[in-house]
Picture 1 (tube, helix red, strand yellow):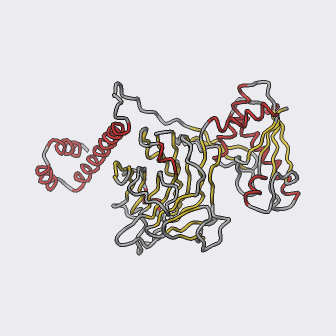
Picture 2: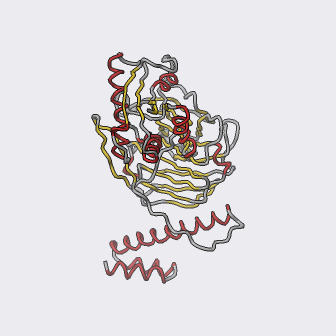
Picture 3: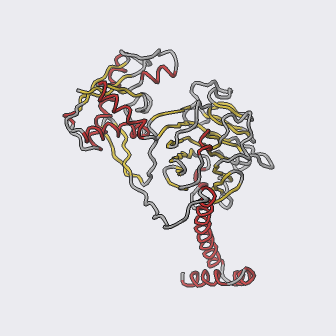
Length: 425
């Protein structure tokens, strides 16, 4: 270790030619140590310079009077209902999914072989199934960009989540995966590549010595991350989460925060989200596979409307509290919505509520009634175990499929019927 440290110090003081001659003389172990140290130092310096450069471009009139302190990641609590009880898990990730869903697609409503109805593309793709994986996936071919069909721009506080299946077989070339934010609404009619955009590249994910994770603006790469173990996800599902807070963007890969740029975004970039199986020579032989896309608003005011409706009208309901299929296990994206009720109950000690579960009409009446009771109880348990709220202030009830608010003949109607109602007592 001592010899490696000495070598690293000499490396920084000598010129490029002297470095080359010196490295030839040191042993293989020392050389690898030097290279790792250099890569780390260069990456740290590059990231600092990148943030400074971006700040000067996006805020040309701003003077830097004082350096901001770095934010330390806060531990958050994630809860999942397991057989009627709530298990609390500590996580180092500070990602919180937005509470109001703007767009969601798992391709269950699309026929195999079709391009999905809620998406647009300038190339080609099709809905497929993958052996060993649940659900349906969108297979996107080489040199094809896709984006969801959105009615309006993303809120300035929003989250984007999706799953990538990083297929690799050792024989065929893997895709150059790119995703990000763009002013372009319709990728079929507009060229986004020379517009103001933010992108992230995942490339050569099956090559230990070639893995690439980088980010950039317009068409220029401005930074990279070499410490994320991308190759460990070859032939596995990688969950991607993006948090947008005005000009700030954070990227999480499987709950690890990889990128946090405070001044990267401009308002026009929030027009749409895109994914790209990027152009390569030779062309990638394996498609890009995505599924379970969820885009949501993270604006506090939007979520607080539920509490306002509860207090003003005596009741409110939401279809954004989600559970695993045919289960009372809460999904993580439900926690932001439930938090509003937990906070309201703590702030108003006289408030008492009843939580009522509702289901769609799939399955038998008896099974749906039991499921709705368990789901209401799961929400109550989450509140009492994560907030200073006694169970005596919350009643629960299940209505099963008996009180639909929409037709059960469509996926959208069923989703509306799978709701949780809150009634002020």
